[in-house]
Length: 473
Ligand code: MN
Ligand code: MN
Image (cartoon, rainbow, N blue to C red; front, side, top):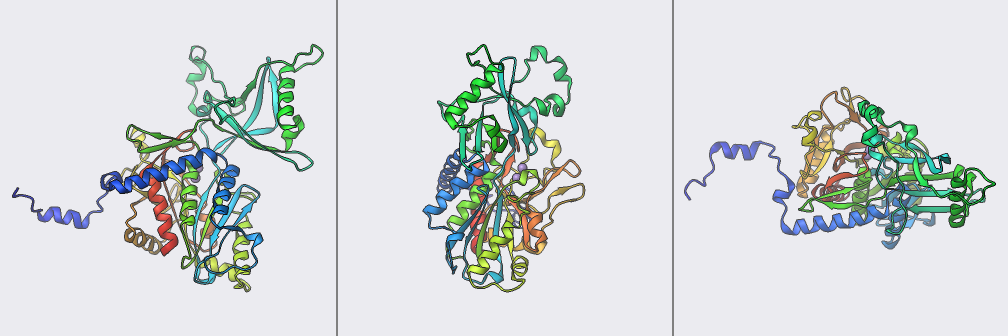
Protein backbone atom coordinates (compact mmCIF):
# COMPACT_ATOMS: atom_id res chain seq x y z
CA UNK A 1 0.00 0.00 0.00
CA UNK A 2 2.34 2.70 -1.23
CA UNK A 3 0.09 5.23 -2.88
CA UNK A 4 -1.97 6.22 0.19
CA UNK A 5 -0.21 9.61 0.22
CA UNK A 6 -2.68 12.31 -0.86
CA UNK A 7 -1.78 14.44 -3.86
CA UNK A 8 -1.50 18.22 -3.53
CA UNK A 9 -4.79 18.56 -5.39
CA UNK A 10 -6.59 16.14 -3.09
CA UNK A 11 -5.27 18.01 -0.06
CA UNK A 12 -6.45 21.31 -1.53
CA UNK A 13 -9.89 19.89 -2.27
CA UNK A 14 -10.17 18.81 1.36
CA UNK A 15 -9.01 22.17 2.59
CA UNK A 16 -10.80 24.54 0.23
CA UNK A 17 -14.00 22.93 -1.03
CA UNK A 18 -17.25 22.99 0.93
CA UNK A 19 -17.35 19.21 0.82
CA UNK A 20 -20.98 18.15 1.22
CA UNK A 21 -21.78 14.63 2.33
CA UNK A 22 -24.83 12.71 3.50
CA UNK A 23 -25.02 12.71 7.26
CA UNK A 24 -25.63 8.95 7.21
CA UNK A 25 -22.10 8.47 5.83
CA UNK A 26 -20.46 10.03 8.84
CA UNK A 27 -22.92 9.18 11.63
CA UNK A 28 -21.52 6.72 14.18
CA UNK A 29 -23.58 3.79 15.45
CA UNK A 30 -24.09 5.66 18.69
CA UNK A 31 -25.37 8.72 16.85
CA UNK A 32 -27.68 6.54 14.75
CA UNK A 33 -29.11 5.10 17.95
CA UNK A 34 -29.89 8.61 19.25
CA UNK A 35 -31.36 9.64 15.90
CA UNK A 36 -33.72 6.65 15.73
CA UNK A 37 -34.77 7.01 19.36
CA UNK A 38 -35.56 10.70 18.88
CA UNK A 39 -37.60 9.96 15.75
CA UNK A 40 -39.62 7.29 17.54
CA UNK A 41 -40.49 9.80 20.25
CA UNK A 42 -41.34 12.39 17.61
CA UNK A 43 -43.67 10.03 15.72
CA UNK A 44 -45.42 9.07 18.93
CA UNK A 45 -45.96 12.76 19.76
CA UNK A 46 -47.11 13.56 16.22
CA UNK A 47 -49.71 10.78 16.29
CA UNK A 48 -51.23 12.31 19.42
CA UNK A 49 -50.97 15.89 18.13
CA UNK A 50 -52.36 16.27 14.63
CA UNK A 51 -53.86 19.73 15.15
CA UNK A 52 -52.65 22.95 16.80
CA UNK A 53 -55.01 22.44 19.75
CA UNK A 54 -53.79 18.86 20.27
CA UNK A 55 -50.16 19.99 19.96
CA UNK A 56 -50.73 22.57 22.72
CA UNK A 57 -52.37 19.95 24.95
CA UNK A 58 -49.53 17.45 24.45
CA UNK A 59 -46.86 20.13 24.94
CA UNK A 60 -48.50 21.44 28.13
CA UNK A 61 -48.57 17.93 29.55
CA UNK A 62 -44.81 17.53 29.00
CA UNK A 63 -44.00 21.03 30.27
CA UNK A 64 -46.06 20.56 33.45
CA UNK A 65 -44.20 17.31 34.14
CA UNK A 66 -40.88 19.10 33.71
CA UNK A 67 -41.33 21.91 36.20
CA UNK A 68 -42.69 24.59 33.86
CA UNK A 69 -45.43 26.84 35.23
CA UNK A 70 -48.13 28.91 33.59
CA UNK A 71 -46.83 32.48 33.72
CA UNK A 72 -50.16 33.71 35.06
CA UNK A 73 -49.53 31.70 38.25
CA UNK A 74 -46.04 33.14 38.74
CA UNK A 75 -45.36 36.41 40.56
CA UNK A 76 -41.61 36.81 40.27
CA UNK A 77 -39.15 35.44 37.78
CA UNK A 78 -35.45 34.86 38.23
CA UNK A 79 -32.65 32.99 36.42
CA UNK A 80 -33.48 29.37 35.69
CA UNK A 81 -37.25 29.78 36.03
CA UNK A 82 -39.35 28.00 33.42
CA UNK A 83 -42.71 29.34 32.29
CA UNK A 84 -45.20 29.15 29.45
CA UNK A 85 -48.27 30.95 28.25
CA UNK A 86 -51.08 29.38 26.25
CA UNK A 87 -53.02 31.59 23.89
CA UNK A 88 -56.62 30.46 23.29
CA UNK A 89 -55.59 26.78 23.31
CA UNK A 90 -53.99 27.19 19.85
CA UNK A 91 -50.60 28.81 20.26
CA UNK A 92 -48.01 28.86 22.97
CA UNK A 93 -44.93 30.71 24.19
CA UNK A 94 -42.35 29.02 26.43
CA UNK A 95 -39.40 30.61 28.27
CA UNK A 96 -36.43 29.57 30.37
CA UNK A 97 -35.05 32.61 32.17
CA UNK A 98 -31.38 33.25 31.52
CA UNK A 99 -28.57 34.41 33.79
CA UNK A 100 -28.24 37.66 31.86
CA UNK A 101 -30.80 40.43 31.92
CA UNK A 102 -33.58 40.27 29.33
CA UNK A 103 -32.32 43.61 28.08
CA UNK A 104 -29.32 41.80 26.60
CA UNK A 105 -31.62 39.95 24.26
CA UNK A 106 -33.46 36.65 23.91
CA UNK A 107 -32.62 33.53 21.98
CA UNK A 108 -35.82 32.63 20.15
CA UNK A 109 -36.76 29.51 18.23
CA UNK A 110 -40.13 29.91 16.53
CA UNK A 111 -42.15 27.23 14.77
CA UNK A 112 -45.79 26.88 13.78
CA UNK A 113 -48.16 24.13 14.85
CA UNK A 114 -50.98 24.57 12.33
CA UNK A 115 -50.88 22.47 9.14
CA UNK A 116 -52.81 22.45 5.87
CA UNK A 117 -56.09 20.57 6.19
CA UNK A 118 -59.84 20.80 5.58
CA UNK A 119 -62.10 22.66 8.01
CA UNK A 120 -65.80 21.91 8.42
CA UNK A 121 -67.98 24.85 7.39
CA UNK A 122 -70.32 26.46 9.97
CA UNK A 123 -73.40 25.13 8.14
CA UNK A 124 -71.85 21.74 7.94
CA UNK A 125 -74.34 18.97 7.56
CA UNK A 126 -76.42 18.16 4.48
CA UNK A 127 -78.03 15.20 2.81
CA UNK A 128 -78.12 14.31 -0.88
CA UNK A 129 -79.58 11.08 -2.29
CA UNK A 130 -79.70 9.39 1.13
CA UNK A 131 -76.04 10.21 1.78
CA UNK A 132 -74.97 12.57 4.56
CA UNK A 133 -72.01 14.93 4.14
CA UNK A 134 -70.07 17.66 5.89
CA UNK A 135 -69.32 20.77 3.83
CA UNK A 136 -65.67 21.83 4.07
CA UNK A 137 -63.40 24.76 3.34
CA UNK A 138 -59.71 24.02 2.87
CA UNK A 139 -57.08 25.62 5.13
CA UNK A 140 -53.70 26.55 3.69
CA UNK A 141 -52.12 25.65 0.37
CA UNK A 142 -53.28 22.18 -0.59
CA UNK A 143 -53.37 20.23 -3.84
CA UNK A 144 -57.06 19.33 -3.63
CA UNK A 145 -56.82 16.08 -5.57
CA UNK A 146 -54.55 14.66 -2.83
CA UNK A 147 -57.35 14.83 -0.27
CA UNK A 148 -59.84 12.53 -2.00
CA UNK A 149 -60.00 8.76 -1.58
CA UNK A 150 -57.95 8.61 1.63
CA UNK A 151 -59.10 7.84 5.19
CA UNK A 152 -59.81 11.03 7.13
CA UNK A 153 -60.47 11.79 10.79
CA UNK A 154 -62.21 14.69 12.53
CA UNK A 155 -60.52 16.66 15.33
CA UNK A 156 -61.58 19.78 17.17
CA UNK A 157 -64.13 21.41 19.40
CA UNK A 158 -67.81 22.22 19.43
CA UNK A 159 -68.70 24.99 21.88
CA UNK A 160 -72.27 25.28 23.11
CA UNK A 161 -73.87 28.62 23.96
CA UNK A 162 -73.54 27.84 27.68
CA UNK A 163 -69.75 27.67 27.19
CA UNK A 164 -69.52 23.90 27.40
CA UNK A 165 -66.72 22.73 25.13
CA UNK A 166 -66.94 19.31 23.52
CA UNK A 167 -63.67 17.80 22.31
CA UNK A 168 -63.94 15.68 19.20
CA UNK A 169 -61.34 13.19 18.01
CA UNK A 170 -62.80 10.47 15.83
CA UNK A 171 -61.13 8.29 13.22
CA UNK A 172 -57.81 7.64 14.97
CA UNK A 173 -58.56 4.53 17.02
CA UNK A 174 -58.83 1.17 15.28
CA UNK A 175 -62.46 0.77 16.36
CA UNK A 176 -63.42 4.33 15.29
CA UNK A 177 -65.08 4.85 11.92
CA UNK A 178 -63.15 6.95 9.39
CA UNK A 179 -64.47 9.34 6.75
CA UNK A 180 -63.50 10.09 3.18
CA UNK A 181 -64.06 12.33 0.18
CA UNK A 182 -65.00 10.28 -2.85
CA UNK A 183 -63.40 10.64 -6.28
CA UNK A 184 -64.62 9.66 -9.72
CA UNK A 185 -63.90 6.21 -11.13
CA UNK A 186 -61.43 6.30 -14.06
CA UNK A 187 -64.05 4.64 -16.29
CA UNK A 188 -66.18 7.80 -16.17
CA UNK A 189 -63.44 10.38 -15.63
CA UNK A 190 -62.68 11.14 -19.27
CA UNK A 191 -63.50 14.83 -18.90
CA UNK A 192 -62.04 15.18 -15.41
CA UNK A 193 -58.75 13.66 -16.55
CA UNK A 194 -58.38 16.32 -19.24
CA UNK A 195 -58.52 19.12 -16.67
CA UNK A 196 -55.54 20.83 -15.06
CA UNK A 197 -54.56 19.26 -11.74
CA UNK A 198 -55.58 22.48 -10.02
CA UNK A 199 -59.11 22.35 -11.48
CA UNK A 200 -59.73 18.61 -11.47
CA UNK A 201 -61.34 18.71 -8.01
CA UNK A 202 -63.55 21.71 -7.31
CA UNK A 203 -63.12 23.20 -3.83
CA UNK A 204 -66.88 23.05 -3.28
CA UNK A 205 -66.81 19.32 -4.04
CA UNK A 206 -64.54 18.51 -1.09
CA UNK A 207 -67.49 17.10 0.83
CA UNK A 208 -66.88 14.56 3.54
CA UNK A 209 -69.00 11.41 3.38
CA UNK A 210 -70.34 10.67 6.88
CA UNK A 211 -73.32 8.31 6.67
CA UNK A 212 -76.09 6.55 4.83
CA UNK A 213 -78.67 5.05 7.24
CA UNK A 214 -82.09 6.78 7.36
CA UNK A 215 -83.98 7.49 10.57
CA UNK A 216 -87.05 5.22 10.55
CA UNK A 217 -90.04 7.54 10.41
CA UNK A 218 -92.10 8.03 7.27
CA UNK A 219 -93.27 11.43 8.53
CA UNK A 220 -89.91 13.22 8.23
CA UNK A 221 -87.68 14.17 5.33
CA UNK A 222 -83.82 14.21 5.32
CA UNK A 223 -83.89 10.97 7.27
CA UNK A 224 -80.14 10.24 6.94
CA UNK A 225 -79.25 13.71 8.18
CA UNK A 226 -81.66 13.24 11.07
CA UNK A 227 -80.14 9.89 11.95
CA UNK A 228 -76.62 11.41 11.99
CA UNK A 229 -77.82 14.25 14.22
CA UNK A 230 -79.46 11.72 16.54
CA UNK A 231 -76.15 9.82 16.81
CA UNK A 232 -74.23 13.04 17.43
CA UNK A 233 -76.78 14.15 19.99
CA UNK A 234 -76.48 10.82 21.83
CA UNK A 235 -72.66 10.98 21.77
CA UNK A 236 -71.94 14.68 22.25
CA UNK A 237 -75.25 16.25 23.32
CA UNK A 238 -75.25 18.65 20.36
CA UNK A 239 -77.76 19.76 17.75
CA UNK A 240 -77.25 21.07 14.20
CA UNK A 241 -76.95 24.71 15.28
CA UNK A 242 -74.02 23.87 17.56
CA UNK A 243 -71.84 23.41 14.45
CA UNK A 244 -72.14 27.20 14.07
CA UNK A 245 -69.73 27.57 16.98
CA UNK A 246 -67.38 24.69 16.23
CA UNK A 247 -63.85 24.29 14.94
CA UNK A 248 -63.62 20.84 13.42
CA UNK A 249 -60.58 19.95 11.36
CA UNK A 250 -60.38 17.08 8.91
CA UNK A 251 -56.96 15.46 8.75
CA UNK A 252 -55.56 12.18 7.40
CA UNK A 253 -56.50 9.24 9.61
CA UNK A 254 -53.21 7.43 9.08
CA UNK A 255 -50.32 7.52 11.54
CA UNK A 256 -46.72 8.60 11.13
CA UNK A 257 -44.51 5.63 10.23
CA UNK A 258 -40.88 4.86 9.50
CA UNK A 259 -40.23 4.85 5.78
CA UNK A 260 -37.78 2.69 3.85
CA UNK A 261 -36.18 -0.76 4.25
CA UNK A 262 -33.55 1.11 6.28
CA UNK A 263 -36.14 2.96 8.40
CA UNK A 264 -34.26 6.16 7.51
CA UNK A 265 -37.22 8.49 7.04
CA UNK A 266 -40.48 9.55 8.66
CA UNK A 267 -43.70 9.67 6.66
CA UNK A 268 -46.55 11.47 8.36
CA UNK A 269 -49.19 14.16 8.16
CA UNK A 270 -48.52 17.66 9.52
CA UNK A 271 -44.73 17.55 9.63
CA UNK A 272 -44.88 21.13 8.27
CA UNK A 273 -44.26 22.40 10.80
CA UNK A 274 -44.71 20.05 13.70
CA UNK A 275 -41.34 18.45 12.99
CA UNK A 276 -39.60 21.75 13.79
CA UNK A 277 -42.09 22.57 16.56
CA UNK A 278 -41.41 19.24 18.31
CA UNK A 279 -37.64 19.61 17.85
CA UNK A 280 -37.78 23.15 19.26
CA UNK A 281 -39.92 21.97 22.19
CA UNK A 282 -37.43 19.20 22.98
CA UNK A 283 -34.53 21.63 22.67
CA UNK A 284 -35.97 24.10 25.18
CA UNK A 285 -36.94 21.24 27.55
CA UNK A 286 -33.26 20.34 27.69
CA UNK A 287 -32.11 23.93 28.21
CA UNK A 288 -31.31 24.76 31.83
CA UNK A 289 -30.15 28.13 33.16
CA UNK A 290 -28.92 29.46 29.81
CA UNK A 291 -26.96 32.70 29.56
CA UNK A 292 -29.64 34.51 27.61
CA UNK A 293 -33.31 33.80 28.15
CA UNK A 294 -34.48 31.02 25.82
CA UNK A 295 -37.91 31.39 24.22
CA UNK A 296 -39.80 28.87 22.12
CA UNK A 297 -42.71 30.09 19.99
CA UNK A 298 -45.37 27.63 18.83
CA UNK A 299 -47.53 29.75 16.53
CA UNK A 300 -50.88 29.13 14.91
CA UNK A 301 -52.20 30.39 11.54
CA UNK A 302 -48.85 30.44 9.70
CA UNK A 303 -50.37 28.51 6.83
CA UNK A 304 -52.92 31.25 6.16
CA UNK A 305 -50.70 34.29 6.66
CA UNK A 306 -50.03 34.49 10.43
CA UNK A 307 -52.99 36.80 10.95
CA UNK A 308 -55.48 36.71 13.82
CA UNK A 309 -54.96 36.70 17.57
CA UNK A 310 -53.31 33.27 17.57
CA UNK A 311 -51.03 34.03 14.61
CA UNK A 312 -47.47 35.36 14.89
CA UNK A 313 -48.54 38.91 14.04
CA UNK A 314 -50.63 39.06 17.19
CA UNK A 315 -49.52 41.37 20.01
CA UNK A 316 -50.05 38.45 22.39
CA UNK A 317 -46.40 37.55 21.82
CA UNK A 318 -45.17 41.04 22.73
CA UNK A 319 -47.39 40.83 25.78
CA UNK A 320 -45.70 37.58 26.85
CA UNK A 321 -42.24 39.14 26.63
CA UNK A 322 -43.53 42.23 28.46
CA UNK A 323 -44.75 39.89 31.21
CA UNK A 324 -41.23 38.39 31.47
CA UNK A 325 -39.89 41.95 31.87
CA UNK A 326 -42.53 42.83 34.46
CA UNK A 327 -42.18 39.70 36.52
CA UNK A 328 -38.37 39.82 36.54
CA UNK A 329 -38.62 43.40 37.84
CA UNK A 330 -36.61 44.64 34.91
CA UNK A 331 -39.20 46.63 32.97
CA UNK A 332 -39.03 50.31 32.17
CA UNK A 333 -40.54 52.42 29.37
CA UNK A 334 -39.71 51.20 25.85
CA UNK A 335 -37.53 48.37 27.09
CA UNK A 336 -39.50 45.82 25.05
CA UNK A 337 -38.31 47.37 21.78
CA UNK A 338 -34.74 47.23 22.99
CA UNK A 339 -35.11 43.58 23.97
CA UNK A 340 -36.28 42.71 20.46
CA UNK A 341 -33.48 44.69 18.82
CA UNK A 342 -30.91 42.72 20.86
CA UNK A 343 -32.48 39.31 20.20
CA UNK A 344 -31.63 36.44 17.86
CA UNK A 345 -33.97 33.93 16.31
CA UNK A 346 -34.09 30.73 14.37
CA UNK A 347 -37.35 30.73 12.45
CA UNK A 348 -37.87 27.01 12.63
CA UNK A 349 -39.87 26.01 9.60
CA UNK A 350 -39.57 23.22 7.08
CA UNK A 351 -38.10 23.77 3.63
CA UNK A 352 -38.39 22.00 0.30
CA UNK A 353 -36.03 19.09 -0.14
CA UNK A 354 -34.35 18.36 -3.49
CA UNK A 355 -36.53 15.67 -5.04
CA UNK A 356 -34.75 13.98 -7.98
CA UNK A 357 -38.12 13.06 -9.51
CA UNK A 358 -38.91 16.78 -9.77
CA UNK A 359 -35.36 18.01 -10.29
CA UNK A 360 -36.34 20.78 -12.70
CA UNK A 361 -37.80 23.04 -9.99
CA UNK A 362 -34.53 23.24 -8.06
CA UNK A 363 -31.06 24.65 -8.48
CA UNK A 364 -29.31 21.52 -7.23
CA UNK A 365 -26.27 23.46 -6.03
CA UNK A 366 -28.45 25.50 -3.67
CA UNK A 367 -31.19 23.00 -2.89
CA UNK A 368 -31.55 21.26 0.48
CA UNK A 369 -30.51 17.62 0.17
CA UNK A 370 -32.12 14.89 2.23
CA UNK A 371 -29.97 13.76 5.18
CA UNK A 372 -27.44 16.56 4.70
CA UNK A 373 -28.56 18.22 7.92
CA UNK A 374 -30.82 21.04 9.09
CA UNK A 375 -31.23 23.53 6.27
CA UNK A 376 -30.95 27.31 6.59
CA UNK A 377 -32.60 29.52 4.02
CA UNK A 378 -30.72 32.80 3.96
CA UNK A 379 -33.77 34.31 2.32
CA UNK A 380 -37.25 33.22 1.33
CA UNK A 381 -39.77 35.01 -0.89
CA UNK A 382 -39.86 34.74 -4.66
CA UNK A 383 -39.26 36.75 -7.83
CA UNK A 384 -36.03 38.38 -6.70
CA UNK A 385 -36.37 37.66 -2.96
CA UNK A 386 -39.63 39.65 -2.85
CA UNK A 387 -41.50 39.31 0.40
CA UNK A 388 -38.67 37.43 2.04
CA UNK A 389 -36.63 38.11 5.13
CA UNK A 390 -32.95 38.11 4.11
CA UNK A 391 -30.65 37.11 6.96
CA UNK A 392 -27.53 39.21 7.57
CA UNK A 393 -24.15 37.66 6.73
CA UNK A 394 -22.78 38.60 10.15
CA UNK A 395 -25.58 36.69 11.86
CA UNK A 396 -25.15 33.66 9.59
CA UNK A 397 -21.45 33.61 10.41
CA UNK A 398 -22.24 33.55 14.12
CA UNK A 399 -24.72 30.69 13.65
CA UNK A 400 -22.23 28.75 11.51
CA UNK A 401 -19.70 29.09 14.30
CA UNK A 402 -22.13 27.69 16.87
CA UNK A 403 -23.08 24.73 14.65
CA UNK A 404 -19.52 23.87 13.73
CA UNK A 405 -18.31 24.05 17.33
CA UNK A 406 -21.12 21.67 18.28
CA UNK A 407 -20.61 19.31 15.38
CA UNK A 408 -24.13 19.89 14.01
CA UNK A 409 -24.52 19.12 10.31
CA UNK A 410 -26.18 21.94 8.39
CA UNK A 411 -26.69 23.24 4.85
CA UNK A 412 -27.43 26.73 3.64
CA UNK A 413 -30.00 26.51 0.90
CA UNK A 414 -32.71 28.09 -1.18
CA UNK A 415 -36.31 27.08 -1.85
CA UNK A 416 -36.61 26.35 -5.57
CA UNK A 417 -35.09 27.65 -8.79
CA UNK A 418 -35.10 31.38 -9.44
CA UNK A 419 -38.58 32.51 -10.57
CA UNK A 420 -40.19 29.09 -10.15
CA UNK A 421 -42.05 30.03 -6.99
CA UNK A 422 -41.28 30.86 -3.40
CA UNK A 423 -42.45 30.71 0.15
CA UNK A 424 -42.48 32.48 3.48
CA UNK A 425 -42.46 31.81 7.20
CA UNK A 426 -42.90 33.83 10.39
CA UNK A 427 -39.30 35.10 10.09
CA UNK A 428 -40.16 38.52 8.66
CA UNK A 429 -42.59 39.29 11.50
CA UNK A 430 -39.82 39.05 14.09
CA UNK A 431 -37.33 40.72 11.75
CA UNK A 432 -39.75 43.67 11.63
CA UNK A 433 -39.35 44.03 15.39
CA UNK A 434 -35.58 44.24 14.99
CA UNK A 435 -34.68 40.62 15.80
CA UNK A 436 -31.76 38.97 13.94
CA UNK A 437 -33.43 36.04 12.26
CA UNK A 438 -32.79 33.24 9.80
CA UNK A 439 -35.04 30.47 8.51
CA UNK A 440 -33.92 27.07 9.57
CA UNK A 441 -35.67 23.71 9.48
CA UNK A 442 -36.06 20.19 8.22
CA UNK A 443 -36.25 19.63 4.45
CA UNK A 444 -39.50 17.89 3.46
CA UNK A 445 -40.73 15.79 0.53
CA UNK A 446 -44.38 16.19 -0.59
CA UNK A 447 -44.85 19.33 1.54
CA UNK A 448 -48.50 20.19 2.32
CA UNK A 449 -49.65 16.75 1.18
CA UNK A 450 -51.49 14.34 3.48
CA UNK A 451 -48.26 12.34 3.88
CA UNK A 452 -45.08 14.41 4.13
CA UNK A 453 -41.65 12.78 4.28
CA UNK A 454 -38.56 13.83 6.25
CA UNK A 455 -35.14 12.34 6.96
CA UNK A 456 -34.52 11.17 10.51
CA UNK A 457 -30.98 12.49 10.24
CA UNK A 458 -32.25 15.98 9.45
CA UNK A 459 -34.81 15.92 12.27
CA UNK A 460 -32.11 15.13 14.80
CA UNK A 461 -29.83 17.73 13.32
CA UNK A 462 -32.56 20.41 13.62
CA UNK A 463 -33.08 19.49 17.27
CA UNK A 464 -29.30 19.62 17.88
CA UNK A 465 -29.08 22.99 16.14
CA UNK A 466 -31.87 24.51 18.26
CA UNK A 467 -30.27 23.18 21.45
CA UNK A 468 -26.84 24.57 20.59
CA UNK A 469 -28.42 27.90 19.63
CA UNK A 470 -30.21 28.21 22.98
CA UNK A 471 -26.97 27.46 24.79
CA UNK A 472 -24.56 29.60 22.84
CA UNK A 473 -26.18 32.34 20.75
MN1 MN B 1 -44.28 25.84 7.46
MN1 MN C 1 -46.51 25.28 5.08
